Amino acid sequence: MTRVARRGVCFVISAPSGAGKSTIANALRAGDSSLVHSVSVTTRAPRPGEKDGVHYHFRSLEQFRTMADEGALLEWAEVFGRGYGTPRAPVEAALASGRDMVFDIDWQGHRLLRSALPDDVVSLFVLPPSMKELDRRLRSRASDDAAEIDRRMAAALNEISHWSEFDHVLINEELDTAVREAHAILLASRLRTRRQTGLVELMKEYGAA
Image 1 (cartoon, rainbow, N blue to C red):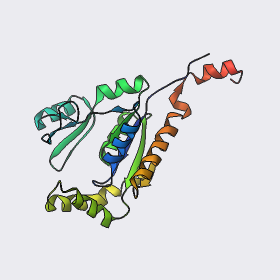
Image 2 (image 1 turned 180 degrees about the vertical axis):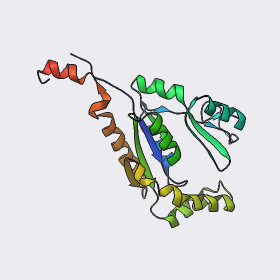
Image 3 (image 1 turned 120 degrees about the vertical axis):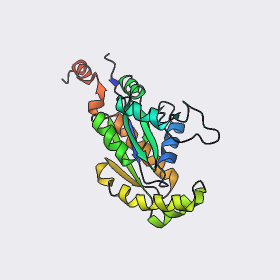
Image 4 (image 1 turned 180 degrees about the horizontal axis):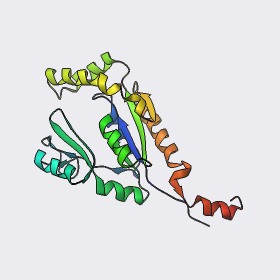
């Protein structure tokens, strides 16, 4: 019988800072061992416990800009004075081998990634229950000072204004529910007809082609 293979999915999750995109992405990876983690490049300094090549590829701003200029990044941006980007080679290798990747990046990264890989991206925008709740979540993290939080809140409305560019939208009111909904989107994306190679040959064996 013909073996039906599948091209991998780029599952992009975006949200304003504090809405839960990284938490949802990490929960998906923890619950599905087949998912490949895309290790981003960043110019920020490592936080305690972070390791180069595991949590991020830590590079200087000059190195980061060189990678962008040479086309070594599928998408990249400088946000709040820091550079973030996605290395091209490991993503293209994963997709070709049928492995899925989950990305927690901003709307600009989503736009660039979709432009670079238009047939491979499935996207999800995560909304907070309210702007008041978003402010509470940012302040409860205690990882940024008040000025940084105010800046992130000011940027949130602009980020949310791009919701319609995404394939799917969910409101992260209760984390477990949001994770289940995100996983359902990923599962459905894997079964899309165009992602499965060998279907025509299989249909011939069924006598249905």
